[in-house]
Amino acid sequence: MPGLNHREIARLFNSTFEVEYGVVMSGGYSEPLYLPGEQLGEGKSHVRYTYDYASSALHEASHWCMAGRARRKLVDYGYFYDPPPRSEVTQRRFEYFELDAQALECLLSRSADIPFHVSLDDVGTTLETAYLYRCRVERRARDWLMSGLPPRAALFMNRLACNKSVRFAEMSIG
Image (tube, rainbow, N blue to C red; front, side, top):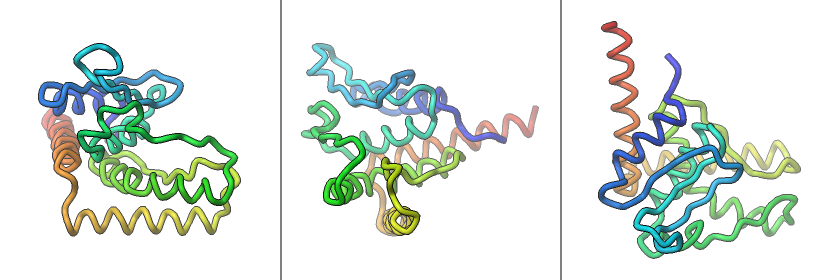
């Protein structure tokens, strides 16, 4: 059985967080972006993910689930994106800021039953660097499983896993 698709992920995100937090997720964009409702002049904030990619939806959900109240009031949570090619220093900064988001994306991907791929976002990265970063991401994911996830992340991870189980049960019965 295939994992959840991007529409199912967005539907679950919206049904989990729209009412309480005033946030909606949608895809179809050339670049991911978080827009707070205050910046848009409307009540709802928007989490935008790239095209129809389930992995992009989960990655952007990860950022939102970890962002505190102050960060959720800023466009893209107040982070500055430095596109590749990057210097060694800016690449390390990218990895530092992405570590938690990718570790959470790894866990969400497992709950949604879709493949997870670490992203260093720079084609010039060596295989050794990529391997070491993947180890750091997986270690952080394990640490979170042992110590506990941020509350919104735990809630969303459970919603993904439960929905996957319901889909499986429906297929088994039907």
